[in-house]
Every structure is written in C-alpha cells, then in structure tokens.
Length: 598
Image (tube, rainbow, N blue to C red; front, side, top):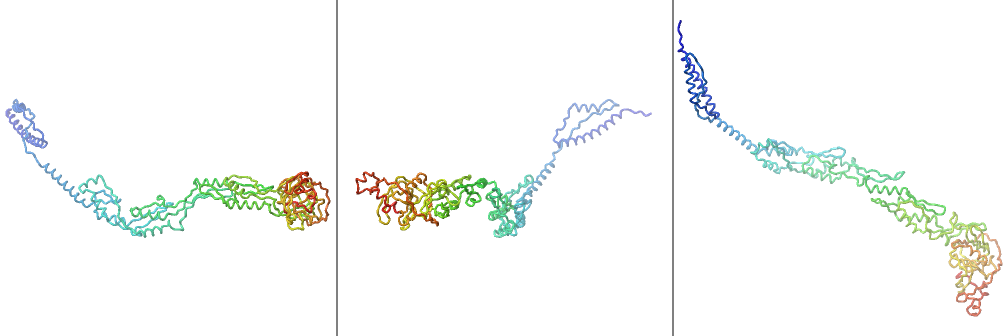
C-alpha cells in the first residue's frame, strides 16, 4: 500500500490559490476599470488583511481554508469617447436645428394659418397663390328674411386678388430660428386680403336678387285705426320685406371690401319698417279719442222737434293728429248750423194763417218769427265737439216768436187785422177778447196804407204823444193817445178819440196815415192784455162782408199838447192861445195826423 503523505496538500492548495489569485486579479482588474469609469475610489489594502492572507496560506498541514481576498485593482487611463460622442450628437442637433432655421427663412412655421388657410411650410408666393385661389372662388352669401339665402359670385363682380406684400410682412414677423416654438404655440394670422371688384357689377348683381324682385316684395304698412260696425279697432302693421336699396348696397360693398363671405340683411337692419306699430302710444290715444266720438251725439231741441248730430255726420269734419288731438273744420260746422237755421228759422218767411172769417191766407213775416244766432251756435258746437262729450242744446235766437207750430209761429195769442173788412180781433190764449171795427191807413194816398205782413208788437206805452209831420202838407203834429202799441216802426195800434165812427170804407179817403185807429175802449182792452212780442197779422181778405161803418161813442179828449209838443193843463192852454192846441181841433179827424209819416 502506497503511502500517501499529506505534503502534497499544500502544493495543490498553492496551485489552487494561484489560480484563484489570478482570477481575482482579473476580476479586480475589471472591477477597477469599472470603478474608474464610474469615478469610484479603489479599496485600500491594510496590513491586517495581507497578514491574514498569508496566514491563511500557511495553515496547518492537511487542512485547507480559503480566505476572501480583495484584489487590488490596477490603475488605468480615463476614456474620452463618451464626450466625443456627446459632442457629435450636439453638433448634429445644432446642425439640424440650424438647417430647419434656414429652411423656414422663406417658409411659414408649422401650424401657421393665414385667414383660416393652413400655410405650414409654404412660401410667401405659395401663400399668395392660395389666397388668390380662395378669392377666385369667392362667394358672398346674402341671408334674408324667412331663412332665405341668396348669393353673389365673385366672378360676377370681377372680384380679384391684388398682392400688396401683406403675406411677406407676415413672414417677416416670424424669426426663422425660433421655428421650434411653433410646435408648441401655433400661430394664426389675419390679414386684409387686397382685392378689387367692379362696383357697377356689384349693383347689377344686387338688383338681380329675388329680394329686389317687385313681384315678390311686400311694402311695409303702418298700423292704423279702422272703423267697424261697432266702433274702432287698431289694424296691426304689415312688416313686409321691402329693402332699403341704398343701405343694402353699402352693406354689400363693405362686405366685399372686407372679404366677408356672409351678410345678414335682417340683422343689419336693412329692411324698411312700418313707422307706426299697433303698440304705438299715440295710436292708442287716437283710438280712445275716436271711440269716444263714436258714442257722442249733440241733440238740438227746437219746439217739439229735435235734430241729432252724430259721428256718422261729423266724422268728415274731424282731423285727428298723431297725438290723438281732435279738431274740426269750421266751415263744416258753420254749414251744418246754417242748414239747421234754414230748417227752423221763420223770420222773413211766408207763413200760412187761418183768419177769423175762415179764410186761409199767406202772410210774410216782416219782423216776427224765429231767427237763430248762427255765429253763437257754431262756436258752441265747435267747443262741444272738441270736448267729445254728448250734449243737448236749445239754440240761441236773434229773433224769437211767441210760439212754434207746423204751419206758423203765431200761436193762440195774437192781433188779427183784416184790411178788406176793416175789422180787428184780439185773441189771448185762444179766447177772443176784442172784435172791433177799425180805420186803417188811407188807401187812396200813396204811402199811407197800413203795411201787410206778420209783425211783432215791440212796444206799448200809455199816455203817449205822437209827433211828426204830414207827408203831404208838411204840417207837424203832436197828438196825445192813451194807448200806443207799435208793431212796425211808426205804425201801430192806438185809440182815436177824435173819431166818431169806425169800419166800412172810411179808410178809403178818410183813413189814417198808416196806423190802426181803434175805438178807445177796445184799445184799452188790448193794451191791458197784450204783451210785447205778441204777433200782429195784417192781411187783405178775399172775402168782403160789405159791412158799413159803425158809429161808436168816444170819450172827450182832455189832454192838451202845445205847439212845442209839450202836454199842458187845460187852464194854461186857454191862457196861451197862440201856442196851445184845443180839444176841438184834436177831435177833427180831417186836420189830425196820427203818427209820423203814416
């Protein structure tokens, strides 16, 4: 049996240790390089560690114990490769950036728009071509009422682009070496596109639009007040679709100049509008005024009759201004009052009269009857109409009568004088108080006849003195009467105490100078019962009763009037025979003048 010693152990161990040491060195070398590359410090060796290493290699025979070894990393030189690579990369990037900067010197940045056109990477010329193409396709859309749209083509108005360098100026505003900012901040530009167009052609194109077709245009109409069967109402306005041609043309010119592609005529207030709408305050006020007049009436009460003036009559006289104020035409008012007066005036007209003898005669109203005060009534009616309030009115009269009837205004109180039969009646309230023969104006002498007609008793005087001169002889007179009742100037009814008979044909040759000579007692009855304003009817009857004169006892005249026309006592008259007028002279009807000129 071969003896195996243990001395080989250390040798094999040393070989293994060398192999491990070399491996550790290699690993240390790699670790050192790695540390140098990363800038790490190399581990320091200590004596203790070296001793431990040596002791480990000299262990007891027959026993092996491996100790960890920290190899010492060798020092190596620093590498510049990463810096070079980094530098090359930076240079490449700068070159690329500068290259793009040069590229964008005559081109627009990415994300750039001009007037809504994407011009990224386009040259100024290319941009102008794009704008020109856009202009070439220009269409102006015209939006109208009721959602209707029409258009005007650029070609129809000779619309063309003309460069003014605006695109170049926009390009100048971009710093080409700041192109990278465009990726983060896109730029939008708006520039005025210089164009030219033919204004005359634009006007022609505008006039060809349906909006200006007269067959399709409805004019605006103002709201107005309409009369209905029950009053008035406001008829609403008509908006229409008529355009203000000048305004539209101005709008289109501005739109084309600005390069706009759309205009809205309604929003631009190009449509003509009604001047007056249904909610107009003045129109509503006018409606209220008219409605008030619709219900208004003016009633004139004349006797038993009445005349009503209503809206249907006076509406043509009215003028209502925009504020609702009402005025009336004076001429229409005066005409209507004139017609009313013509209907009811009797003054100066012919009237029918039924005589006491049963005859019907026609007499002309001379100073008796109704005569309306037209001026006063017209002024009142004008003010009343302006007020808009209904009214009832009895007119004012310049002349009035004692009554108003269908045939005449004489009534049942009057004096009736029949020239033909020399007879006079006095009726009061329909009762005959006096029926007496009389002596009227001398029918054989010019200017002495008692005038015919319908008269009004305008005065009454007791103990009157009638003064005047004879028309034929010129002799003056001053005649006393107890009852004086004039009805036509100096013509009247009075007592005639100097006459002994009345009636018959005395008036033919021995008549008065126009007055109605009446028996003293009958004149007194009339005087006591008659009122001023009583009608006096004087006529000639076609019926002659042929009654002769009647002797009537008269009282003696006791009053004395001197030549100066002054009434004196009988004693003073007898003493003054040169100036006095005796009773006997006064009683002589042939030398007595009853009244001035009659």
